[in-house]
Length: 622
Image 1 (cartoon, helix red, strand yellow):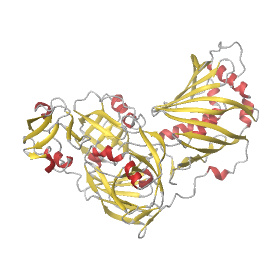
Image 2: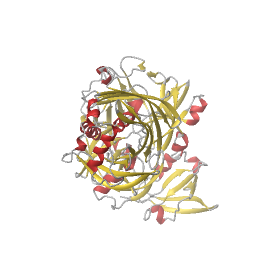
Image 3: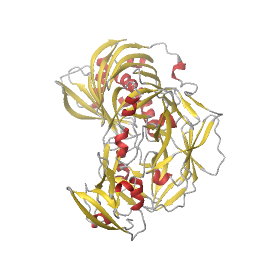
Image 4: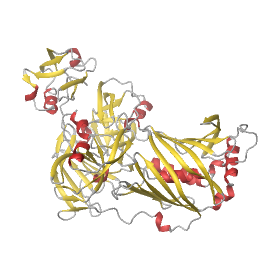
């Protein structure tokens, strides 16, 4: 399943930076030089000398987001040192920069050192912005441009655009033409926009600062309200605050030693299901490295009597997805036990029911990242190792895998030519190329078979295209089938900073070791590396509808299913006169449709309350 990410870490740092951005006016509205606008703004808020004289700060805020309320504390020291603690009661996060690297700690105490290339570039921009390099017209990094005039409410504003030569980020800053205070800013990254409206300016330490901000984060349309309650310039700051915790949280215990090995899992329809016990109830949970937080099904949370709070918007497939939060009581897998965890809450059951599966939760980043996780697809076993004592001596290839947000990313090459950084997504059934990457390389017009990709947040129409090869960690797999969205989606498959998702149709050929602490992946050839997996040969995509019936959801043109006369919405009643109830599930039906090319099948369907027989001759689609 695609990423479900929600992080507040860094929010207060953005706000603190925005606090210090004013100028004495001449005739209202007659400025067009963007550098003059910025410089006059700085004069109006107190002057550049006063800003540069402030070398440290301590800030407290009251924060409201998605039905949750709490506080933040932020410490900073020029030019790059920072520390931020966010406390929303049920959800706490912290992060900072010690002058050497950025770090963060998630809601369950998991430490992450940030090595993602995109974040490193933003860190360098922050350093240069802290030195006010953007005020220099001759800067080799920043460029300011006057865009024009625009209103924020009833206030006329100059609009200045800032771009840079380090990455694709940009921003618009809207200054009141009368006061030259910042009324609004819009920060753009390749995948998001943050709109911030500033108000309640107060003088502290000789500088005017905005004490209230209203933020809207797009495309998820998440709204955040921030009210400063304390701003202390040139505060005495303990340098140790900027350092990450000495060690990550240890909120789990192995039954024996420093590992549990060869736990069996069920492999259903391209997904890994493991047995998890919560309050003496053993249920199947999906193992999903694409989920930024572990999730419990909303109905199961209600059954357990858990208190559910808030509702944030997170990335999913297609549109966004709403996630609430709860405290999950002690849970365990065979050989390992966890203390209370903060997890997300969403309707998982109805989502995966479409694929004929059942699960009560998703084990995401905050579970997987605590271990070195070994997945042996061929033998359907997983092992969990303590990262502090783990040593590897096998035949596999190690590759660097920087964590972006909460996902391990690895270099992948398609057809020997198209190289990019892709996600390791255990919750994805197939290989998916992100729309921007496919568009950039002119791959969207390639012929293939259309389908629907389902996930948290909805669905997207995609085309499955067969390529010549895909290479991971030095291992090349021939004839991979890769999904590509037909339109630029709002959610994860529209991510411009990552180029694709590696799901089970590729990963099942390997044995994988996922090491989040070391930010590396070890890849071994699995026992099924050279196996020829059977593929579906009707072209039909079949899911369960709300009544549990086998419904045809797409009939790609030119496929055997199309030629046989299938239509979207047909309900399958029988195959070769065997009632669908005796075929057990969608997996069994898929096996029937994956028989040898040339096999003839008779489907009995229900269409508009009438039964009809359709005959299909199976054919290789690629």
